[in-house]
Amino acid sequence: MKRWCIFSETAYRSDGDIATVCPLLGLPPELLLQIVSHLSIIEEICLFMTCKQLYAAYGPISKPEWVQVHRPAAAIPQSFYSYTSVALRWKLLRYLENDRWQACFRCLVLHPPASFPMQKEDSEHEELLCSLGLLAGIVEICPCKKLTFHETMGLRETLRTRQRSLGALSTQLAPGSLGRFCWHSCTHHSGSTQLAIAVFPRLESEDQLILKTEYQLSITQEHPGVEPLTPYQTCAHRYLDSWLASVCQGTPYGLPDRHCTPCSRIFRCEFCNTTLKCLHVWPRGKVDGQGKRTYLFYTERNLGRGSSFPDKIWAAQRSHPLRTEAR
Image 1 (cartoon, rainbow, N blue to C red):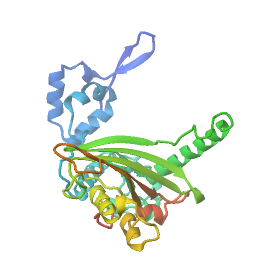
Image 2 (cartoon, rainbow, N blue to C red; image 1 turned 45 degrees about the vertical axis):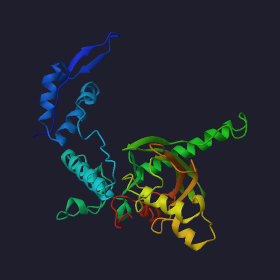
Image 3 (cartoon, helix red, strand yellow; image 1 turned 90 degrees about the vertical axis):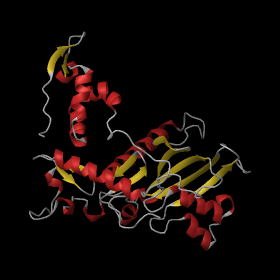
Image 4 (cartoon, rainbow, N blue to C red; image 1 turned 135 degrees about the vertical axis):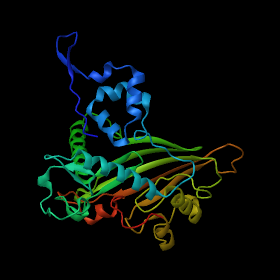
């Protein structure tokens, strides 16, 4: 199937301005949904990308599989999600390539051809390196939020702008009234398990980008880790439920002693130095029937120093490409 090329008709709004109308919007809904049902996932994505009005009108009705995130109650290997999402996105990027844009396998985005300075004619597309080099990639922050290195640069600039703005307001507001910066929040369900996530970024010395991710996990089981709960990861190397179980069972109430070597190994990932701490568990007693136990905990991750190129600290946090299997 060729790329979609939909010519818009001209219409006039009540204020006299010219607006474009996709002719497909004039089709009966039943006919349009029948057409969409015969498209592959990639073709359907391209159709809705070509006409955002069409997606706004029919996307929520047709609910194509590529829009939805299906999460089973039992955990399955994270590599399954990584493989399917990466493979689909890579296929779409290759489909969208043209003279102006070229797909980058490590960043999983389209770059201008000039971003591939060391391009070789006989190289496979997956082997081509963009200007960021071998350390380029993607860091998964939560199931619905992933960051490329260029996006971390944008986040740093947002934090700098916020710091300047708060500095100007500090003399007008009461101390402590400014609060933290919640950059992203979301809630996910996996069977009877509910996971609420909030991400709080900050800048430290050497312009290091630190992400503090707070979790609130509600489960019907007595303890996490008894059975697989979620396919989610707290970093690129550790699953959320198994790591939380290790922290809660290996240390008193998940509050490890920083000076204790065994405790340090429990609450810190040896591959990327991400730390996990459990702050509160309630109720403390036995949970009966369909009652739930809630765990409040957080992780801290270092996404590297401020620079035009990724460093090894950033590279250790990547979920794609990933060299070390999650545990």
